Image 1: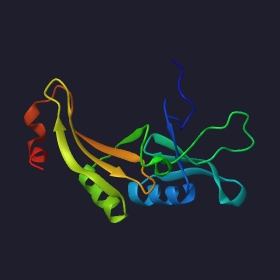
Image 2 (image 1 turned 90 degrees about the horizontal axis):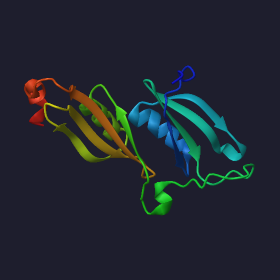
Image 3 (image 1 turned 135 degrees about the horizontal axis):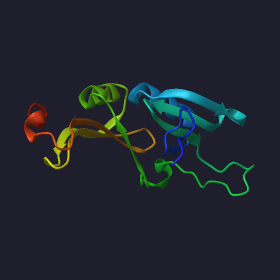
Image 4 (image 1 turned 90 degrees about the vertical axis):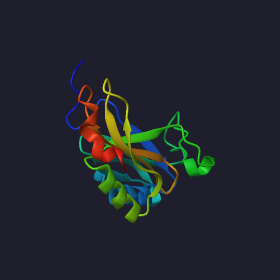
Length: 161
């Protein structure tokens, strides 16, 4: 397999918002993303953007089909379909508790508070929380607290939480 272009992960996701400009502001403030590229079209519509978190990348765009496409993307926000989602995004962070506290203070809805999930010595343990952004996208933030094959007792202090 060939290397990806510089600055691009092997897989990235696009998320769509009715108010993509406000979503970009929220994602940078609450979740710590950084804007790498932002392309605005007519009337301030976000035609394309690239937000990075470490070596990860998501693209954020406006809902509604662009008229200049032969086969437009039928993009909607979860808000437009009763909060239903067809994807959830997962981001590894250094400190799930601190990240959650920051996201909560910035207005993110925390659905599941940080919890340590230990999948056994043959697997790993993660500290994870789930948040929902203002338009209903589901976000999982995870911190690896024990690697596969390490003794289970390594993360014991976090299991009490």
